[in-house]
Length: 163
Picture (cartoon, rainbow, N blue to C red):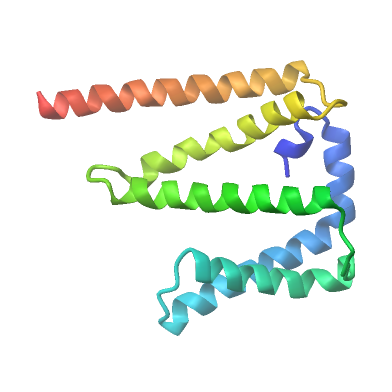
């Protein structure tokens, strides 16, 4: 949520205050769901746990958002198909990378910081009213420098261990 309002702190705090109860309720539902799955002994990963979490979040959100049964415009279906494909592709790539020998989850997790950077960049390119501001660009530069520095440090460590 912070990345959505990056560079607009007043708007961020106003939205946070207005939706705080909803955010806390969704967080509690997520925590409950994770503990329930963990202590049930079920080893559900990826698609099943995401479907259960999505169902629980949908149930919780109905009193706040209401139900919208359609009809939906073509833009909605195109966006839904694109986001579904993107999600499935990202999870597939993630799982493939985890099966490679020598790949650590901790090192792979760091690359998730590129998600808000790519999202903001795409919104600037696609949406006509979105313009980059200095704070957003500086934040992206910090993320890029940190990822590059970490990548070089990791390569240096691997070379020292091998050589």
